Length: 422
Image 1 (cartoon, one colour):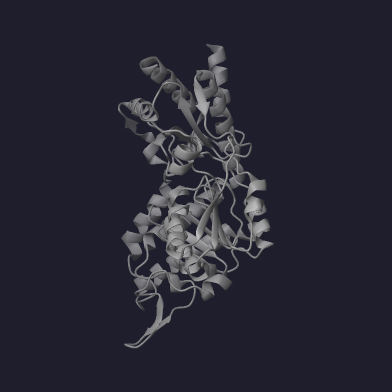
Image 2 (image 1 turned 180 degrees about the vertical axis):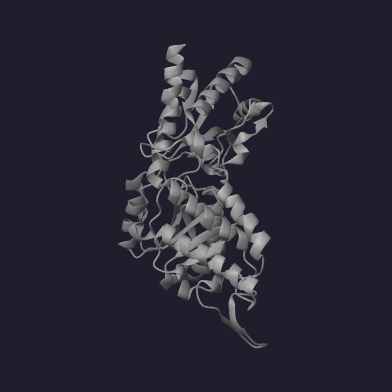
């Protein structure tokens, strides 16, 4: 009995120096039950949960200053505009951009990639040119480039991935030639957890004057983003991956590129003046923000950034790395587990298979125990199906509010799955 108490105390202690159990009180959704069991939410790579500060910021907007931005001289519009632009400044500081002109609000990473593909890629790509992505790309950073290359009769090439789920960098360097006009790669793999050497990729590309885009959807929740340090030309992430609302995201792009790019969408707000004969586009960043924006989403994203700043990335990394190590140990002890993605440099994502069990069946049983994991291709079908020759994986992804006890419940759930199905 005493040993159990000591073990539980040890589990409650965190290397981060903060109380994860107190932090969980800020996430009301974690207090509910699913199928009669306390919820264990391990699907954070799909979307993470929202603290009360974010929820309240959206509610307060609608309660107190609901109005359109940039278009009114009345007080509510001015207050809404001030809050909206304050959120943009928070994003600028969050990614360490030079100017708010380089921060465009989007609906998420998907729109950010599409904007770059069609506003920038469309203008630089010609027949026979090449675009490089990797074998581990999320569909959002693969399909737009496929479509563009098909349209332009260009060639889409893939940086290969080794069995551990790491980019084969010497093969990447061999792919560089005068035909390559664009490189777009994922910063952190959503299905493998691999943290890619993006700074090295960018340094190699820039020696050949090739612009680089980073899909930072999975990086932003786990790693400090610094566009000056990486020297990326474009970067996108989604608000709902960083404790913010859905339907909001950002595209960072160097001002020199944005000035030359044509708008991705057109309509209100993105214009400076319109006559029956011509349209003069608005200044940056509004040139790329057509129509009424997701005002409450931007404000919620600003509140999410405040939350991250309060917790600190050093605490986030320490807590998540501790959970990752513990999960690898506990799941390994269950036996009959095959891990997919064993890169040396990883974020807190564990993809695995239970020998003799289809991922969907395992996920369904775990759900009955209140454990939420993701099963399937994880929007990386070419990687899972063609590269690894699998029909899917089970993915458990951890966030700052997850605990070792929850990983214990996952391990217990896996044992139950094996008992039922193997």
